[in-house]
Amino acid sequence: MDPRLTLARPDLADIALEGIVAAERYDAPKALQVTAPTAALRKAPAADAEQWNQLLFGERFAVLDVKDGFAWGQAARDGYVGWVAQADLGPLGEPATHQVASLRTYAFSEPNIKSRPQGLYSLGALVTVEAREGRFAKGAGAGWFVEAHLAPIGLASAIDPAEVALGFLGAPYQWGGRESLGLDCSGLVQQALGAVGKAVPRDTDMQFSFFQPIEEAERRRGDLVFWKGHVAVLLDRDTIVHANAHHMAVAVEPLAEAITRIDAAGVGQPTGWRRP
View 1 (cartoon, rainbow, N blue to C red):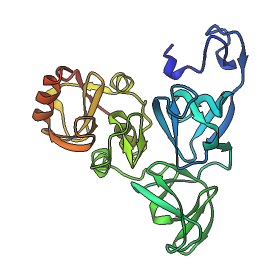
View 2 (cartoon, rainbow, N blue to C red):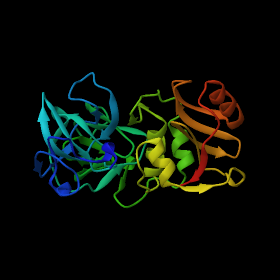
View 3 (cartoon, rainbow, N blue to C red):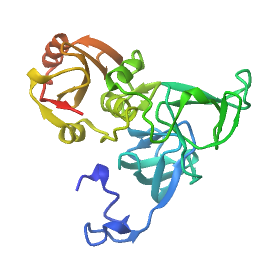
View 4 (tube, rainbow, N blue to C red):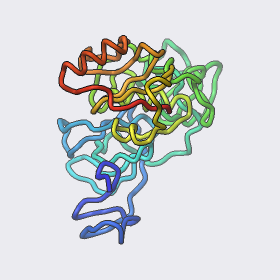
């Protein structure tokens, strides 16, 4: 079983895995949710540990263990397992009614754009609207959003994942990131497809196995090209947009130039083409 997606260690495992994986003890995880605009999911219970993934406001996290101010558990969005700071988590509230539909947006302390911003929330963050006043909607635990920046749950906020990916142009590269202020290649794919209502795995190898294979000659806008450890979104047959460590940003690049550059760096040729 993939350890990235399995809530189990030699000493402790999810009770749902009893009889499936070996552990000294089994317990039931406690469902919490993210109360910060973003929360890092880390390799170890330390603030400087490697970030494996990133959770957004309102997303659920099932906690099985706590250590040194960090909670060990599993993200509901994509099943990823790791450590999240306890300060970024809180009790479950009412189910989300909306999601952030713009690339990023502020929540304000009052239903007034001149009031104090209380946080910057990224595309896909989950919001429970509990009040409305004029053009504003109050998100529980967040503040007042301009409601035009929200979309009801179940209604995709976009129709073209390539256009969503392009909207992140210039965002800094951030390993493990999913937020509008910084993300990695597979995070960009996950966010772009999430905006059109498609839930997809987190890492490049997972995405490569998940999506429908196509031939290179079939490629079109919105398809994905994969290398070992990297993925990009096609804007057309000859142009890609991707979050990458060469530019250290989300960048648009001619496909042929990217293939040549990535091959010269020792990664090799594309490993395949996929259609979401």
